[in-house]
Amino acid sequence: MTATVSDPLLDLHALLAFYAEAGVDDALTDEPANRFMQAARQADTPRAATNAAAQPREPRRSLQPPAAQPSPPIQRSQATAVPDEQQAAMARQLAAEATSLEELHQRMVSFDGCNLKFTAKSLVFADGNPQASIMLVGEAPGRDEDIEGRPFVGRSGQLLDRMLAAIGVDRNSVYIANVIPWRPPGNRAPTPHETEICRPFIERQIELVAPKVLVHLGGASAKTLLNTTEGILRLRGNWRTYASASGATIPAMPTLHPAYLLRTPAHKRLAWRDFLEVKMKLRSLG
Ligand code: URA
Image 1 (cartoon, helix red, strand yellow):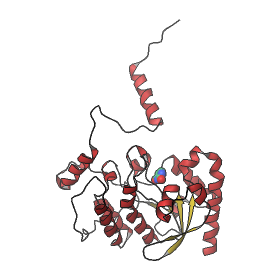
Image 2 (spheres, protein in one colour):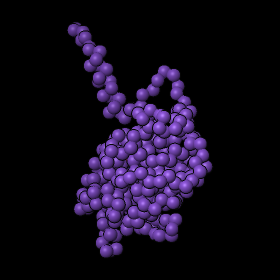
Image 3 (cartoon, protein in one colour):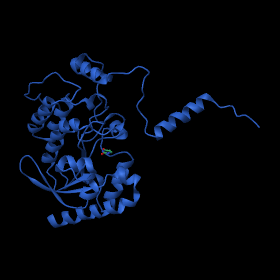
Image 4 (cartoon, protein in one colour):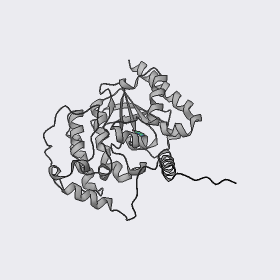
């Protein structure tokens, strides 16, 4: 029997490749780190004096505000990493007072009230055409989106692009955003509190885009924005009405999340039907 001598570097490389493939992309140290405290300390430090590398990176492209906007007339409390009602109230006020997408984006950039901001690399605001008839809303950015600063650019984004193409719609002609604009660490599900803090931003974004049709990609988006506890398999395929704070109503189609479809390809035909519904609705709305 011949023993094989393994190369430690090759082994290490293979192990890291295996981890990356399995979605393990957050390194842990031997000592536990209190991220809440770190974030609070970072938030307490004046921005100009902090290490730029420690600041969350901004999206590299798409829908960047053309210029800095004046600071909003709001009394900022101590930024905190622990979500609380005060942060949600501040998010509601900031969002409500934004008069354009650029202003909303800028306000989200300077908002420190969501702990997710401190572990994410980017604020993933949106992608696509702000004048679009169709607006799609997912749950939260994943690793690829966090790196690129754009929603739905990873594997599920590629499937989404193909689903749109299947109904003759180009990705650049729609507007895509997420309920949560910062990637939750390790792709964990956002907590209800984080969702409540981020909700005003996506609600205002929908109001400012004012699409003809809204598409909820997955249960989290549908449940949060349609205020329902029904599961996505029951919700999908049926038109709902999204009501904005200003009283406007938008036909809303909940459908299956592309990431779910990657795991359950047999359900792609259901999503295909939902997308056809969207296409027909747009035709009927003219
Ligand atoms: N999943 C989402 O819900 N949003 C993204 O942007 C990417 C994956």
